[in-house]
Image 1: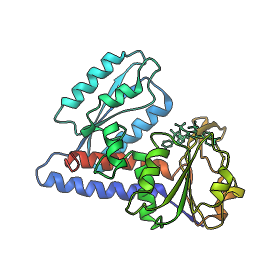
Image 2: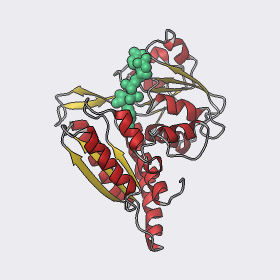
Image 3: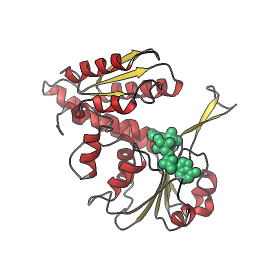
Image 4: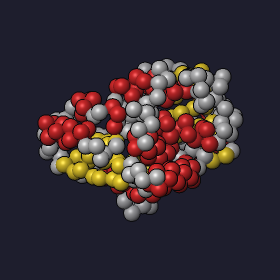
Amino acid sequence: MQLIDGKAVAEQVKQEIAAEVAQMTAQGKRAPHLAAILVGHDGGSETYVANKIKACAVCGFKSSLIRFEETVSEAELLAAIDRLNRDDEVDGFIVQLPLPKHIDEQKIVEAIDYRKDVDGFHPVNVGRACIGLPSFLSATPAGILELLRRYKIETAGKHVVIIGRSNIVGKPLANLLMRKDYPGNATVTVVHSYSTDIKEQCLSADIIVCALGRPHFLKEDMVKPGATVIDVGTTRVPSTQTKSGFKLTGDVDFDAVAPKCAYITPVPGGVGPMTIVSLMKNTLLAGAKAIY
Ligand code: NAP
């Protein structure tokens, strides 16, 4: 069994990005600029945004954080998005999700100029990715592709089972893995909470991607020997062993499943760091005007 070290790959990709940024600035161009809008003080969102800003510094990007209280109106948020859309000094920006209930998330996502949508959530980017046109790829699926690429894991003709059909992980990943490219050319099965044959599907899978958010869902008897297992799940479960009082738990029963696998990602340290790195890659592309 080989552990897929997402943390190490992420560090390497950030160094590669930093080298490209150094080249850009040496040529007199300005460094890419990522802005983030953060609403409220949710612990998870605060951590994610702080990590994204830290990663910007490592990559040599400029970053800005725009904060709003939980009570911000949808109109105020839309006005901030409009300002960022029109700001030539901002190459890409994100609105950290989830948003408070009184704000329509889809409306917010669609208000972002797709040419600055470095999260890859705008329907234009989702649609373009779906038909194989250049676009900003959704960060988590793009991070998973990068891990498969760096570990040279074959996908052509392989059976990939994805557990979960969310718009940010399951669906875009399924599309990417069936495109005519590498990683891709896979036979993809997507299962979800209505599926009745998840165990059977998993047992025939060469690659299993767990993206459902149910700790330890994937058990040892659901995995065929030699399979690759990618664990996207990050559920916060209470823990007395950490300072924060919780620990991140994946969707895979790691200790039991790992010995059966050819490759497996840990949680934390697998897909998570790659998600941030994909955002950095999209920001680099946005700064270089390489897509739009
Ligand atoms: P989501 O929007 O909550 O969707 C979960 C999906 O899993 C749904 O399609 C749901 O089916 C399916 N599901 C739930 N329970 C199931 C069950 N018992 N059996 C089969 N399918 C089941 O999730 P998400 O946003 O994609 O996130 C999934 C997990 O990944 C979460 O733990 C999240 O925190 C984590 N995540 C991590 C990263 C990272 O960077 N590491 C990034 C994104 C998400 P239905 O559609 O039928 O409801």
